[in-house]
Image (cartoon, rainbow, N blue to C red):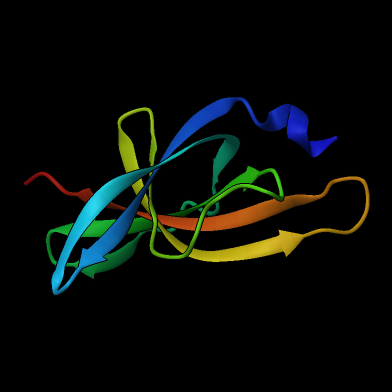
Length: 104
């Protein structure tokens, strides 16, 4: 079913805390499918835009809001996770954002 699209390796990094200090640590990898949601560009800063994508992956995937996902050389921030656990196409629908810098 939908898992036939899970062909892209996604690397997960998660913030960990020791006292008042946070560091980014590797939290694993998973196979998923990434797709841009729309062509609309949302101005986030004067020098950049944010594009929203969705990543489909297996229900048991270890991913959390706030994680940083790397696909190829692109890094995305996890903003929301929807669990689709009914029917033949069970999967997680992970909404992510990527900030792009505009060149002058």
